[in-house]
Length: 514
Ligand code: AHR
Image (cartoon, rainbow, N blue to C red):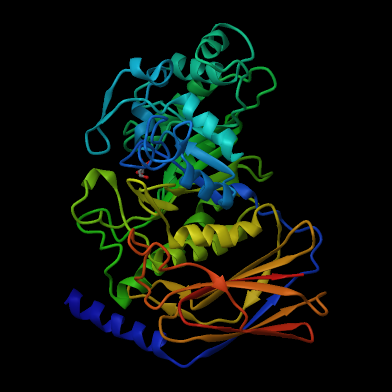
């Protein structure tokens, strides 16, 4: 019975995708002077001790044959510099609540080993620790976001970690100097636990919020360092978690987190990252854009307790989650990354931009070799994923003024009844007055003609790029690393304050208008 019902709905999806080329009007309010700034932290990253994210992905060690700078892979460093990574969360994830920072300082050869029991039982040698992470952030010019251990660590341990990283003097500063770093680092973001409802301690929200109050009390501001404290927030639809935290923690937190994965379901197969039907493609997008209603509901709860908007929402884990690649360790979460993932990233950013009066950070899971990664590595080889290219194309929106727009596109309905725009758009204006517009056409078959109406642009100078590929399941393999990559785009015309763009099927286009 259920199968017949789903098949009937699925049949309804296909004609939407297969209908004629659509004309879409996008009208941008480009005159706006007091618009919301899109915080650059919306383009944040997440690096966990999981699979080959740290070891092999970011870090190979100074003795490695793989080209490196002080142990960090040169190719990955260069790729990340281009992305303009604003903030990086570390060391987890679930790993954070089993991580004991003292194991990761001092001479590397003396560091104790541990079993990474969350992620495949791999032996962790702690060769990448506090110094390695914070120095990496300095090299990339990004803010570190430390995720503290509440699940299995003590208040004292977390308090001393903060002191070790940020105090200008005192016993922890002395120890830090003995380990090679005299000056304190600047550490702003401090997560007090991770997924405390699950791998971070299986707590109920009342218990966690009381624990949070105690842990945060002893995380001090040393010297001129100012901590921004983040409470471990809800998983997707757990609105009660947010409600209890807002009620019980209130002004003792600067932000509360939220995790949302684009996943088919937590039981059984999550589907292949590279082999999927058209129906599965549209369902993935449907699930991805469902995040908008989830964000709205969490914000509504926050609004009711914090009408003055003092507490931020941080989506510190998001992205696609598929089955691991065949033959790889199921605990290492290594998945390929196709044009479908690129589409998920673009649609997600379009949504995030709308809610930045409350949503101040988002960290994709994860930066390398895990889930929806920026880069994948195999020994000395590295590929940039289609998702990487979206992050690069969209980084023009970092710290720019959000420009509200209307888009006349119809929606498609996926086979779970979720709606998603066929064509979507977002826009911002940077400090130099350049308007950046990014367009997505999710339709697998049909192009679209987009007419952008934009005030205050007379004879614009426009440069544009496109990301598309022959098949939506195309990806960058280690033997064809440039299969999916952006290209210059010029199928547009500008006349009388309107720009007409001929958008191919399944494409993402960015336009810079000056
Ligand atoms: O990103 C992978 C895992 O997903 C993280 O460790 C955890 O916080 C979440 O469940």
